[in-house]
Length: 282
Image 1 (tube, rainbow, N blue to C red):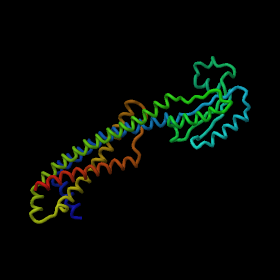
Image 2 (spheres, one colour):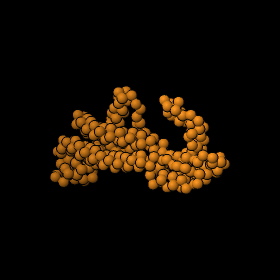
Image 3 (cartoon, rainbow, N blue to C red):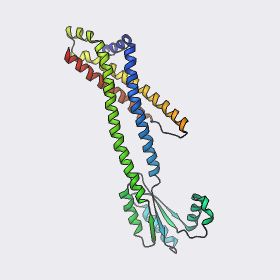
Image 4 (cartoon, one colour):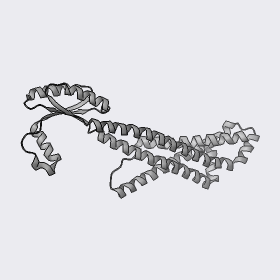
């Protein structure tokens, strides 16, 4: 297509300006990508902590095992529940010795109560749902006490909401700054070809015909900048892993593709704004 040919000719005519545009896009998206990587790992960390949310119902001593098993079967049928484990007094003692090994000599005899450990499904671990299920389990006559860490679950859910809102706000701010910077660099390319645009207008070229190569050029620069930003983000992550000695998650194929597409859209948008302004002045 002529528009694609014109866009590639523009790359060859001004390689330094094209490289500057791609580099600017890359570093703008690199900053955005670093923030996205931090947000992704925070979300993953919160999800791992959230997976540990459970309700522990302590059983009164002397309760027949068949009554406990029948209650466990009923609780398993709750739509919010994924699993119910019966923990006997002996198992509770063994678990306490394992989790608190330095105090193992303190635990003697079967003084720890049996319990029902209720695991909740993903999407049903918010404070309201956990409390509701806990109240239903507590209503059983042989349940002496119940624990589910109400305070830390509330704090965890609040932290997750704050992280989501802050992530969206800062992400939009980074995106806006990136679009402004990209628009400025592409505007330099448009100004460098202002005489060419004026001649094209004189010979009767439509605005759409003039604009199309710039839009294609902006999209290509956005894709190349996105690929470079993705590479820089990956290298930064690897350096961070080696320096801090802990594993971090990287963008999967879907998120990486979205990032590259986002770069193309920003390049396209920056070109559209810059060319549109220039055409209004010609």
